[in-house]
Length: 378
Image (cartoon, rainbow, N blue to C red; front, side):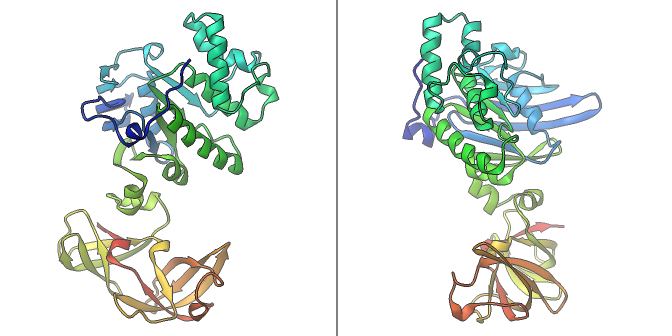
């Protein structure tokens, strides 16, 4: 077995004419009267780490099951590497799946678990041993062929499941919340190992998760889903910084939400007259008109709180009602005289200028730029 190492060119993108690893067009999936997916469109590029992200019941696992052939679409087209697979059974598709439960055979050795798919394909024993040895070395389990799953840790069993899927050299590897059973520290470690492994082998990974941080950390691109629909597809930076839907903005963090009315529009930038506060800047990719009632959402880390009055930009005065220190980050709860409350994050004292240290009860100035706040029509 020869593992293909992904080159810098491949990591940046395939040639223009290369087919997508997975193409989904207008796919709907119904279970009786329940619509699990509603006419979704997705293009997953060859060699990328692509995540399906959303809350429970949003349709992400159904999408993975359709790609894997465990479910068939009610309508729509599904292609893998340019080939129509809508009616191709799972065992004939160039994909493999890694599940949260690992699904290892407890009575088999690690070597036999990894070699199982190769044996079903009729690969000679000598070639199976070579392939198993290579893939176990790749996932840092070299020399463990003779152990059984019960003798391994959770992280090691997860690596065995990965090795068993990768040894078959699929065009697409499907991962259905594979780290969900691990503790937090091991989960973080495996996130790094998974992304490094994906870069080494160059195989397209389609990863299902409900963990926002996991998706942002690991993915080349992310599809955010809700109620059977794809709301936005983009890079982690695009999804987090320029959400196109209010659900995406709220799902990807805990933004502050304020009601107001647009008082001025200049391209994508605008001023919003916030109830009881005054005019503050924001932006929107959607068509928003002057006088329109909107919601302004701004993330805590985008808000600047200071005892020093800003020399430029738009701001308002407030009171620091509570300061909670979480490691090197301080959570500043500020209250405006109108009753509005916001949460802002800043570095804890000792990591900022002593002249701008803040404490409970301090009068502070609150500001943000138009690029820091997003506006959505009510």
